[in-house]
Amino acid sequence: MMTTLVRKWTIGQVLPYAAAAFGDRVALISGDASFSFRYLDVLSNRAANGLAQRGVGRGDRVTLYSSNCWEWIVAYYGILKVGAVVNPINVMLTPEEVVFVANDCGAKAIIASGDKGPALLAIRKQTPIEHIVLFGQDIPAGAVGFDHLLEEGAPTFQAVEVEPDTLSTIGYTSGTTGHPKGAMTSHRNVLTSTAMTAVMHARDDRDTVVSALPCSHVYGNVVMNSSFWYGMTLVLLPKFEERQVLEAIQEHRATMFEGVPTMYMYLLAYPERSKYDVSSLKRCTVGGQTMPVAKMEAFEAEFGCPLLELWGMTEIAGLGTTHAYYGKNRHGSIGVALPGVECRIAAVEDAARTMSAEEVGELMVRGPIVMQGYFGNEQGTRQTIEPDGWLHTGDLARMDKDGFIFVVDRKKDMIITGGFNVYPAELERVIAAHPAVAMVAVGPKPDEMKGEIAKAYIVLKQGHSAGEQEIFDFCRQHLSAYKVPREVLFVEDLPKTSTGKIMRRQLKTLDAA
Image (tube, rainbow, N blue to C red; front, side, top):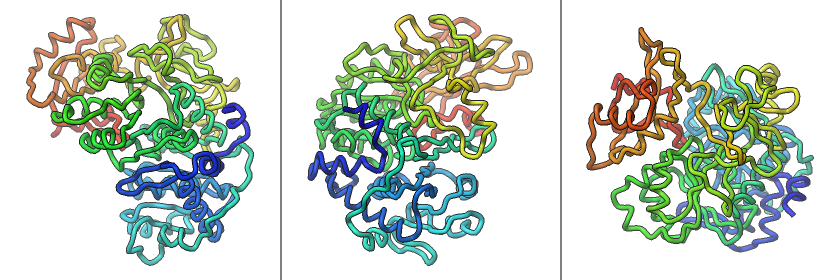
């Protein structure tokens, strides 16, 4: 059944299907409000009509700029119903960065949270944006209220028919070097990732999932789309906060929680965790960065459910690998390729050569989830996708004889110290196992003799203490001498993205704190 859906369907058809299949069951809980599948479909119809009345249609790009809320979801499906292309961007982007993205993709409209209004109106003339639509009340002159859009839009709308391989989404990469690039993904890309993820995790209409992942991020987007397509109830939180997550799991008897490693580490370290009933959880997922095995084991022991690691990226519209709920769960591994997707480990210096089992090389992906390319950037596309369809991920990894993949590190994050390659993720996994450590990140520090040395930035658990020498000694028990960090800095927190991923490249800012 799902193969047929992925082959023929588009994202704009997800809510109409869900409305017909699941009707008045609760689809979404956001704050104090709840929405049925049928009502979400009607609201997105109203949004689609409102956009269409303003000339937004097939192929137009619409930027979506807000934190998690029900309006974001309604706008997302409304955009895709009119045949337009959605451009979901990180809520943390500055006005200058929004100008670049809007110009780069040629955005015709932008839909955003009310607090973004003044800045957007100020930069409007620097962009091709014709319409600014804002969530909330007290809409400033020059913008349109999203509520007004819904009020004037009719409750019925026939989704514009487009082919599954039509462009659906332009998602911008983080832009760690130079300007970010807009990854173009089709309806087929997004729905294949969504469907195959659901198959691997056995998601169905008996599930309730709690998520604080930004819907604008591909991980959060897969969580959202799979929830509605498969009849799940999505409890959407505006941001991660330990108490709110635990309360939501307990109140709604959630069967799933999905997050990045730092979220699980915060939950483990939360002093009042034992006050909440989390026995309803059947499985949880973790992605965005590799999760230290020690922390995965600690979470499973504390929360009583399996933690399934996954891996994905913007260029593949979501997940590329994960563990099957009913299969072997190998901690430390990102799992196996999704059904219908190929993964291999290629030699770093020669992408055409495939490495043998257990050899480290670059993880490469091929299949129906691979993006169409970077918007308006043919050179970047050629550098990332080989002529035979294999996508460079930039991740160093190894594959065991059973096909399970283990990420060693990002190629760009590798530290070269005295000629030796040191992978921060490996050090982080070891240090995270220390009983006093709540979170850790490892970054490079320039060194006159060795070129670079590894420096560990550590957040200690509440009520615990540890010294620099203690960390060194602990590392020496588990790591080769050249891998042991040469410096340790204890900090109160680590720099993170809006999704909760640790930003290794920002660790150096802690040195001046």
